[in-house]
Every structure is written in C-alpha cells, then in structure tokens.
Amino acid sequence: MFKSGIPIGKAFGISLRLHFSWFIVFALVTFSLAGSYFPVTYPGWSRATSIVVGLVTSLLFFGSVLAHELAHSLVAQAAGLPIQSITLFIFGGVSEISEEPKQPGVEFRMALAGPLTSFALGGLFFGIRALEWMPQEVVAAAFWLGWINLSLGIFNLIPGFPLDGGRVLRSILWSRSNSLRSATRTASNVGRAVGYIFIFVGVIFVFTGNWFSGLWLAFIGWFLENAAVGSYRQLALQDMLRGHTVKEAMVREFPAVPPDMTVEELVGSRILTTGRRYFPVVSDDHFVGMVSLRGVRSVPRELWRTRTVREIMTPADAVKGVRERDDLSNVLKLLAEEDVSLVPVTADGHIVGVVARENLLSFISVRAELGM
Ligand SMILES: [Zn+2]
Image (cartoon, rainbow, N blue to C red):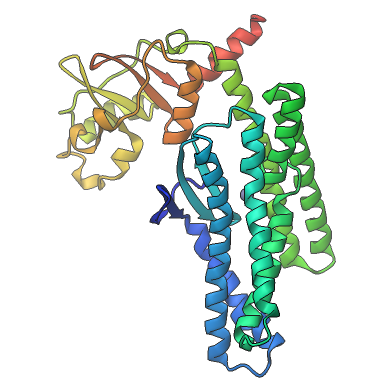
C-alpha cells in the first residue's frame, strides 16, 4: 500500500517520494490555513498575506513530517538496516525498510526517534514564536507548526502497532518474552483496539453534527485497524515459512510463452484461457523475461496484433527471482516489495519453477491440516 509515488529527490542515500494522496492533504491543509485559520485569527491580514503564510506553513508542516520519517530511517541505517525509500502520503510518511530489526533495542530506538524529532521541532517552533522581535506572520506560522508537531509526536506515541508507540510497546514486550511473534500479536491487538476507538469516536462526532472531523477520525481508525491486522498477518506468515526452502513450495509445471508471440495471441490463447496474469518468457530453453497483464495493458488494443511479448516483457535481468535452496520467507518479502503475485525460480539462466502467492498459502494450509 502507498508504495508508488513520484520521486522528489534523495537525502542521505534514501529516495524520497510523494504519493498522489499527499497532494490532496497538502491542498486541504493550505486551503484551511489560508482560507480560514489565518484570516480568522488575524483579521487585519490581507488576502495575499494569508495565502503566502498558509503556503509556507503548509510546506514547513510537510518538511516536519519528512524530518520525523528521516529520523526513523537514519537510526535504522545506523543499525545496519537498508532503507529503500520514504513516501509521504495522506496520513504522513512511511519508511520502506526491507528488513525488520533483529534486536528489540534497535526497534525501540528506531521507533522513538520519530516522535522525539517531532517534539524537538515543536519546541523549536514554540521557541521562535516566543521571540519578541519576530514579525507577526512568522509568529503565527510558528505557533501553528509548534502545535502540529507536538500533536504529531503525541499521536504517534499511541501504543497501537504499527504506530511508533506500538513499535515501542512491541520492542519492550519482545525483550521480555523473547518472542517477536507474540509481542507483535499483543501490540497489534492494541492497535486494533485503538482503531476501533477512533471509529467509535468518529461515529459519535458524525451524529453530533461534526461530520467532517468524524469521518476523518473514522477513516484514520479504519486505516489503523487494517494496518494492525495486516502487519501481524505478514509477520505470522513469514514465521511459518522461515526454515523451509523454495523447492518445497514451488510449482514445476507452468505455462511459459515464447518472446516472438504477439500480444494478441498471448491474450487470446494464454491469459483468457488460463486466467493467469504472469507468464515466464522462455526462448531456446533460456529464461528471458516475465510478461504480465500490466504489460499488456500498456499497449493500445489496436497494436496487439503487431506487438510481441518481447516488447512488453520485463527482461530477465530486471526480474527479481529466487533459487531452489533460498528460504521460503524471501519469496513473501519479494512478493510484497515488487508488488507481483508470482516469483520465478531460476538456475543457471533456466527457469525451473515458479512460486505464486497462492502456492505459499496452500503450502501453509496443507501443513496446518496435517498438523505439521
Ligand atoms: Zn513515526
């Protein structure tokens, strides 16, 4: 979720991205600051002043969110965890960390770094506001930014996973019980409870006429509840797969397609007849790429007859695959990271099998039914 976004630059080797939902929030924040908050608080300001201060304040707000997120990432990086990217989206930011921390101490510091940064920024803005010689426009912006950073720090410390506070709680439980899974279960149950409380309070707000705040709260609650369930499920799944090899779950029979097949043939004789969305492309027994429904959609229909699979496939060197002896939990990670539903298993330039999401699920459910 929220992985795609427009790249806006790099900081400390981490790529920064903006999800499209960010623009909605940026517009909302700017609009409410420039259109109502500043004009109401400072009736003497001209319209232009309100708009300029509103825009600058809004940008600094998103800078603050970014600083919060960078703090998490930098602590993670210092602990040796690779950070891929930071994406700003509707509720703030998400850091894309491809590995979970291996010690509770690292998670504790990583989780706390964000809220501490927000508190520090809050203090900084309140400090600026207190300077007597500051122009009124700066004081106004600093006051709002001080409050928003303080609220950001407090909100994120709510102890429900996957919020920062939930991660702090998890790290404490984890260091006590030595079980990451049971710690995650408890912390995500608290996260779900927090989500339900938000939804409940939101509904009350809606019925007492405060429908905008109510819907917003309920939406945040719904998002929290979902994220809490999702992150526990992901971890539990990873736990069950760990220690098994790709070979145990992979499928050896899979339909491959030749690179010179036309897109029309691919759709007519393979995609529509099998319902599959991904096909390995094989030429003279060699694995040359992967073709997907997404690739087909990139070609206008009238060109299906003339375009070939080769032109729309992802070439083999850009496809992330696994090997037979790899740990099965790596497949789950790849499926999530690459946002695909199937991973090829290769050996010396040949494709020997595939593992799809449903293969992992049936691998687990069959073993569970056998009581293994
Ligand atoms: Zn955070």
